[in-house]
Image (cartoon, rainbow, N blue to C red; front, top):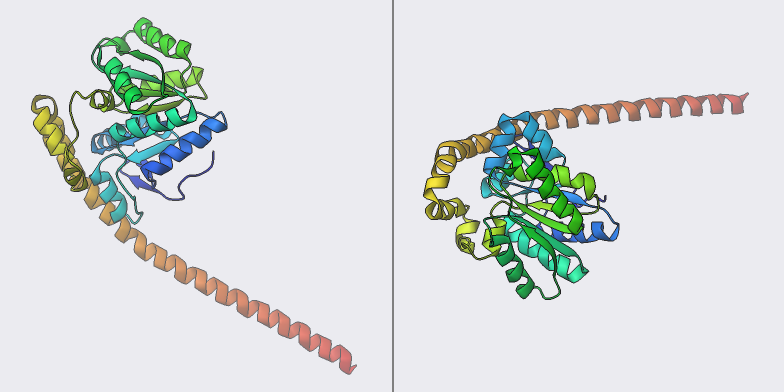
Length: 296
């Protein structure tokens, strides 16, 4: 596949692409035309924290073609480390962007995740918003399905039978990424987006924060206000302290890299100077020999 972004930055244990949301959409559309599939991970602070603590989750993320910065602390960490991540690219926003691309390209969509009735409601909302969008199917797997090999196989079989071009998997990390790994084996030309709460958001079950709040990096406060019992422990005890450590680590990485880069540049400059001197000496010797032969 062509490289849509020359720069990637290591944030925690995750390599994040420097790419805008529009670039993700263009990349998926171009890949479809080449009959190539792939997977997208939207790396927020919670995902980066989990991957940094557990190497097997970092390896799971690394299997994806695209890893984007879903969370302003991730964007800030990339910038502090010296690689400009141009913007936050969220799963809930990509749900709409990629659905629009699918409608334009004549591709089909499958929605997997959410409470019963929610993926169907999201499908109706997306079809109304993007006329011509083909919905290949919807499914709301029962809670705990992933602990049963039979239930997991049944869920996979439903998606494979529908043969969609695009699948939104909203089961939360890492459950959705593990299911995507299984699905990709049977659907190599399909694109998968692990979108977390993107499906209920598309269904209108709850709204995102305002654009101003998003730009300030405070959307987590909006989510916390909506679901305090579910999110308080994760956001306040786990993610917030980790976000500060992440930013501090990014600064240290940048400062450590600078002297090395300077030393490398100095070494390269000395090597180039020595090479030029040697070349000039060889050229001078050759010229002297030529003059001697002429004199003879």
